[in-house]
Length: 76
Image 1: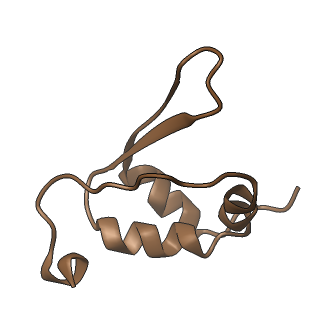
Image 2: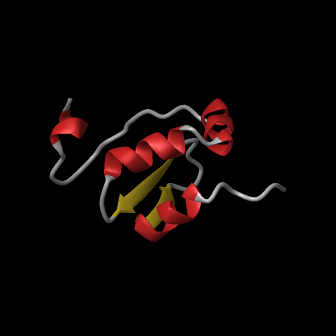
Image 3: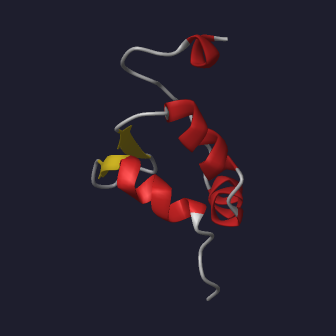
């Protein structure tokens, strides 16, 4: 396995929580990622990861939500 890019370590510092949930027997699962700041920057960073692209090729997101106060950039 190759070493992750240095920018991933910055992301880990800003990642406050990562929670997964599912009901037994269900084909659906959920995940909640909580960042301390710069949400749009982190989303852009994650979207560029090869692992994220492989993950999205495996699953189908049905609902994506952002909670909290958004910057003008995030609202655009």
